[in-house]
Length: 117
Length: 296
Image 1 (tube, rainbow over the protein chains, first blue to last red):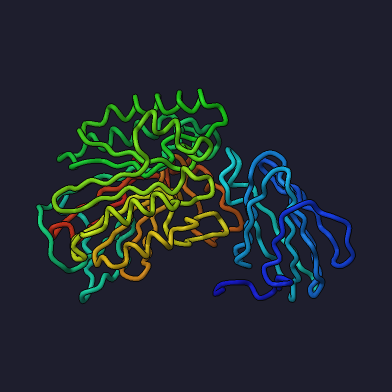
Image 2: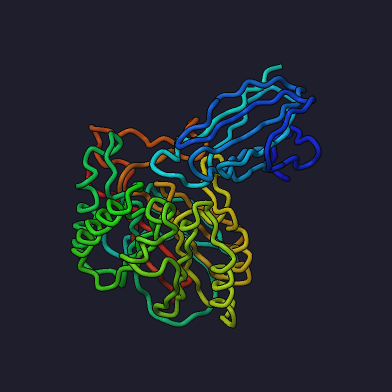
């Protein structure tokens, strides 16, 4: 995984699950909604060392969720929730973007994790 | 510019060495054996017909200016190819076809008998290439000219920026049995390699296409998508992106977002352009000249 940002750790290997989210204890859950042409929220504060569970849902298109620095991506099929568990290990900024072309505005569909100490 | 005014940048040894040179021009040279005569062709890219916005207040005038510039060449090129994003995307299938119809009417004014088209994601990703194929034909194909084998690859009809297994199989079959020393030119819209994945400047399965091309010693890729002229190597394969005919985009990593560079009223059409490529030494050397749409 050359080029992968070591400030994040994917818990449980590639912890990519597709299905219906259920109640569970464990890491803090951050829900991210993808719709043309934005992620909500687009800026996500995180703390270094804290594991979080991302729950991603697309509303209107099979958007892509790509975090190139982590070599991590998933297709977001409308009607399904994709879960990704990550843990940043150091402060910094990590960008993510939609990588399935979704229309006039696709190029602006991106976001960022902002990791504080 | 006369054909012999192309900048020559020599390569060394048996491999391909890329070097930069005079502003706006670049070239490469490889060594090997082939058949055929010298010729030159023109690359046009990313006209985004239908775009309206501040990044180009003359959006409807820029493509016609490029057509006029090509028509003014003292010696016509052997052929022209467009490397995608002929039109700007729209959700409306009828409007997409209307834009393609207008585009076709404008480029019909080119005084060059052979013009090859290929789609960009703005043309093809929302309908998986349906309108493009109706208006322009296949999205991937190959042809030969003066001993050079040209291959147009479609890495945009899949909205996930994939070439796909079927087309990769077609590419493998197209390459089968070819002389590894014979010159190949590959035309794509997106870069085949991971130029800037954080800006979606990549092809998800591009590495598979590059792997199929690697046994061939003289491969050159011309592409669009990134609205600027960049010259990169992956191993011995040279990749040359072209300027656009609508608005320039930033150099990868030079700014936070991939937003268009603003229109400069003091230097209109700055950063826009088209390309002449001189194929010399029987298709083993390509001298590239990136030319402006209009003189400042």
